[in-house]
Image 1 (tube, rainbow, N blue to C red):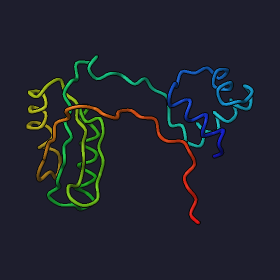
Image 2 (image 1 turned 180 degrees about the vertical axis):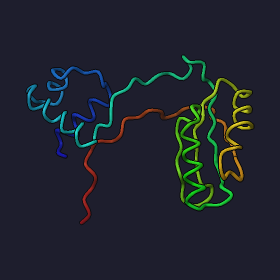
Image 3 (image 1 turned 180 degrees about the horizontal axis):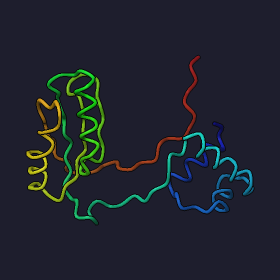
Length: 157
């Protein structure tokens, strides 16, 4: 990946609806080479897809919690069962397995505190292998949906 590919990625992260003509102009290429590079970035998996970023509040999802999950045991079947089950909970918009304690971090969106409490009691606490849930409520988003940095990583010397 060279500097031009990184420019393409930077521009598309800001505006994924750019036409190929506008994208080419912004990165200093003609349309055909820009289109070839774009297709290669898609084919290689550097660009995983395109989507609309939807405001949660517009959907009435104004409550967010970060949920730290500690597992009862950490054998392969338990972890895979938990991960499979949590992937099917639509209110969980992000799930990450962590090193150390706790074992997982979930980002959960709901309409309000009551809806979150019902979700935790009925769904999250019943996920396979869960020993303990510890929730922290999100007060404010300071950085949200930031584009990934596209500058080249420093080289080891």
